[in-house]
Length: 442
Ligand code: DOR
Ligand code: ZN
Ligand code: ZN
Image (cartoon, rainbow, N blue to C red; front, side):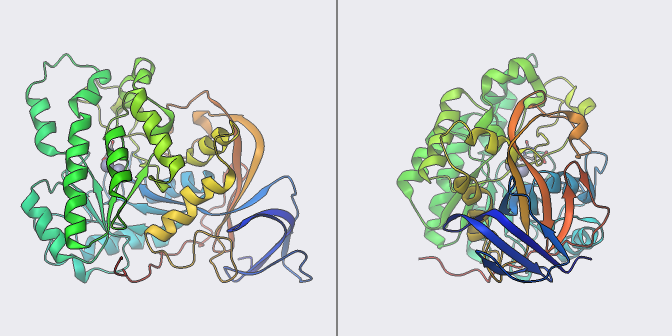
């Protein structure tokens, strides 16, 4: 265990901008920041070519453990996260068994305590059976509501059930927002000859919009915090911009930002995810909403499936793609095109996830905060290659893309967990995320 690290004369991305100076971490916390600190540290890092960022937070991943661990485990998922500069993840409840009570939640927390390289928290899934007891659960980012069905059996699709959920809980509710009846109607009319390119029509934009509007109204009526996961449509962006409610927040994934329906021709079922990657007009609207602040945060929806599973024909191939390792490089690369700055990336992937989910002491480089730190090389150019991907599902629709801007070193609670290509074996660095009590919004 290293007790203290001093970053010496390096660019630090502080909440009010980039500042060239020193940052000291001791016993897992940031203890001092200044132009030049005269202190002793066990390890001194002076790499002026690298930029010191707050560790990135991915508030939406699927790591498959317990359950189909041939796709991913908490350990391998956390390694891929660490290599992608992510120091904290929130994992979804559609595992096997599903995470729907204290026992299944504790089981995941124990696996993470034993094997995760980075900080962790787990959502609890809402089911017909557990609505009465969700508020007895603590230490969670929120409740995951599958309002439309996706991978696994978690589903709560009836408005009366939503009403019960919203009236019974004080937790944040994060939703997979697609109208189940509209998806079923499309499914009933399928010919069986569809290809992946039809996926956006099988799960149409109207299904997402209808569900997002209904749930947003419910959140406002009940004065509860609703977070819409993986936004995909131009109409939802317009709706949320006009709604402008403190009760409703949302996220977008890198794959919905960097891919569109034209990519089905090359990637077929590998591009198939729920809600679908849609036409270019939706992609453009997601970018505008992100840049204007209507979408305040990015989360990966890392949903690993093996290649042979994705090789099945459309209709049998599972939905979802691995991506947790590439969110930060994709954004850093896009930053070089000049549409946004490093500060924006940090707001979308560290500060805002922390603020929206009420995480204590993460998301910023500030004295007293946890020493979760990612060093990035903004100039390094590297091609995405499967052999560098640490997920068990080590393929990517971004394979072969040349990206400039990569995480080089990842530090979790003051411990080095990843350095230029490799993870440290079990550094016992990870901690469960601590959340502020849910406050009333107003
Ligand atoms: O494409 C998806 N895959 N969407 C989801 O909602 C679930 C995820 C998975 O777990 O595979
Ligand atoms: Zn989802
Ligand atoms: Zn998901």
